[in-house]
Length: 97
Image 1: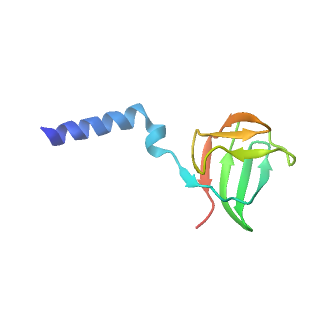
Image 2 (image 1 turned 180 degrees about the vertical axis):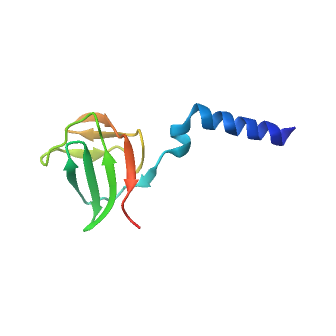
């Protein structure tokens, strides 16, 4: 009975909150620079090595934009500060292998 309840509960969590279950998360603390890929994507670097691509669809990013992460361990749908305004990160993709 307990095993069936656990499976059912796990399945319910998966259906009700797929973003939490499948969210990409990366430790971005210590990034040293960033580069705008386009107006809604940035690439974060640690030294000369790219570590992540962030897609931020609702904020405009320019080369002179000020960017600040709100926490080191960053996931999809977390917030980021862009020109002193909170913006939501749509996706966090790892670029390191």
